[in-house]
Length: 282
Image 1 (cartoon, rainbow, N blue to C red):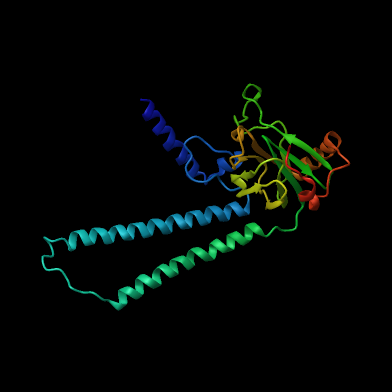
Image 2 (cartoon, rainbow, N blue to C red):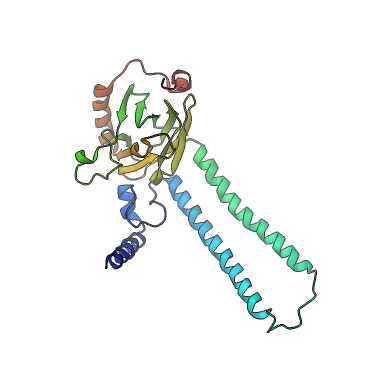
């Protein structure tokens, strides 16, 4: 009975997801029980990642079915019973050209959108907001260099969760950004290598001590989107989530004014000099 209930829940959940085009997932930016596939996109980069994923899936499926069909034909048509006198053909120029050219065309079809997506991810547009994310054992610190403040973001304990907050993903202080704005994210590690990853944004980049990495996203819908450290960074690796709250321009301006007063610091380093001032923890 339990297995049947889970199967029904699995089918119902995925029918709802595919029937709604993944809209429900995009509103929450978090994984769902029995979910199949990638999280719904919240940024243009993730839109392209999902398209490329689906394109490869269809391509691989077509190749697999084609090879399966060839194997079935060979087993049926060329077994000893059906074909007692085997062919002695040892060379066929046309077939050899085909099995050389077709794989090359397939690789080109994969390479072109792959490189286009890679360059799209790596080329950071002109930023509207810059945030430095520092990975620490085991939480994240977010610095807004232009506004000169920084704060820590720690996982909310299970006993402190409020209704609607996901376990192991919610934090006490979320990273807040405006909707439809380019957010430039700088990452660095304070002690060991961490990794800043938010699936709905299509971003995942290492935070390495003494080195600044960069990525970007442009969230197209308001909401809270969750991620986690995706590098095995130590004992509490599984307990340093990422929560990004995307709000309207007006809400962001209000939050920014309050954050400046709450977290203001006058001695924050220039973001271009982060690599020089960040040192591994002793």
